[in-house]
Amino acid sequence: GPNADPESFALVFGIAIAITSIPVISRILFDLGVIGTSFSRIVLGAAVVEDVVLYVALAVALGLAESNQSSPFGLPAVLSPDPTSGWNIAYHVAAETAFLGIVLLLGPRLLRRTLSVRPNLLGRVDPLALQLAFMFAVSALCVVLGIPAMLGAFVSGIIVGTAKSEA
Image (cartoon, rainbow, N blue to C red; front, side):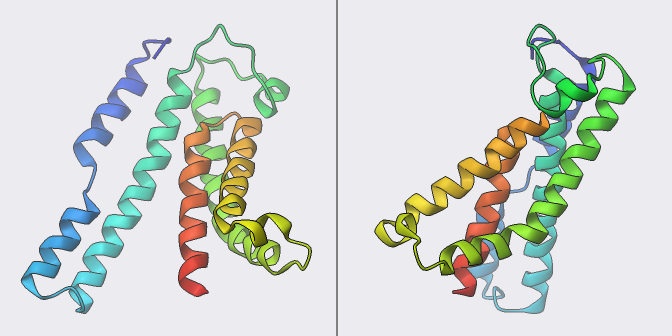
């Protein structure tokens, strides 16, 4: 990134090594005929949890690598953490972990309520449009918090996928 930060490089390098391929794992389990077993649920569940942790770590690395020349926006502008300090790292880790937990906890309820509202014109015309609007809103919340919008898009994809499977 613009900062040429060794910590963010180490995080991205470690994430690149640790990335799992859930489609490959699931295809192997399917080909072996064990996809419906509790073993495969444990393996795929662990892979999903690892991917979520890796996305949070990637968001932290992206936050560390962002340019110092850009003026802060949103909550970082209020708190004004020094980009080279440990406080900046602590802020990114805390903000992204709290964001992930709160949005995963409250997001499905918010999406279900939005879908059940009677004058839901956007969802009635095209459900995909409502899902995109939800993704943009969650990503905008990330921008206000000073964390990468990619994390918001990832989390909203999890929420929409969960909402579809419940419907």
